[in-house]
Length: 340
Image (tube, rainbow, N blue to C red; front, top):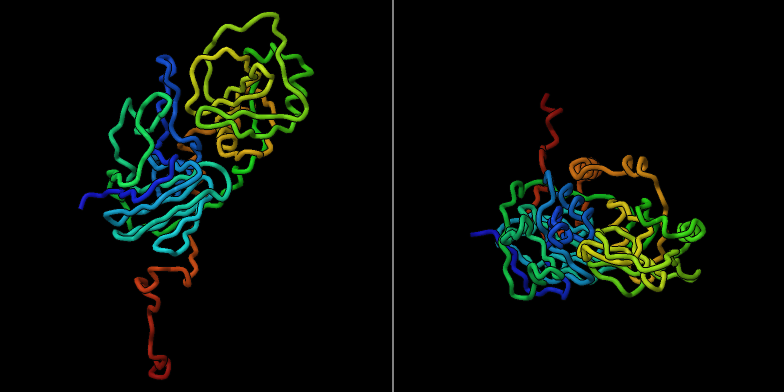
């Protein structure tokens, strides 16, 4: 039987995402792809993949799924409640799904975006080198109940389940950023106040960007006139007309006229993407030399995460497939020493 993922039900924000379409800004197309790229790196590490493959991104709510052939999955990103035929599954871990079993994933417990990855990857038709849904650009669409998605073959269905310790990036925290060509439009006092401010993730936010609020007053630039529209990118921190920061995310526009006080490091963007409304955030400026030391290539990131994975320890009381294991091995009569 051909490997497929059957979607019995899906939340309103479930879509196919990979690492997106980098290098297309010149034609007005932002990268898109997973809002939390690190979640795809974690899935690759758990599944033993050299690089991330297309997966399901679940914004706030998951759904109900089934596979047609034995397939390993990885659950990463914002923690969600997952069950296989009613038995609880660990998050930030890999698991084996058998045909006919029903995987249900409910709402997030923390953060915003959870991910369901499969060992062979989702094999939907690529467009411009990516399988990612980019709603702003009209590429693809949110998934719906009743759909069936093609899967690649799991190259190692017998590989033991793995787990991965994951530090909290789902409740706010510190975002490191570098200054840019427009930082000088802000006074030194404004920049210092911005760096020390406690900011609140507002209810205004999506895959295009997230608005932040503050109780210490706005951060206006010092401009004698307007600012011409300019090239912008994911991670840029724009200051709106009200002097409030707006952090651009993966589906942002590529041209904008708001001044930018700086740009968040790519490795910290998952923290702002995952921050739920009301989460506290702070900004910490770093120079280019420090930013270069912090950043790692995708391959190095996956290698580092793979080295942190361990065998998943499961509670026998919750193992729906307990009887499929050989629980006793090497049993003897106990009289071997007497016979010698």
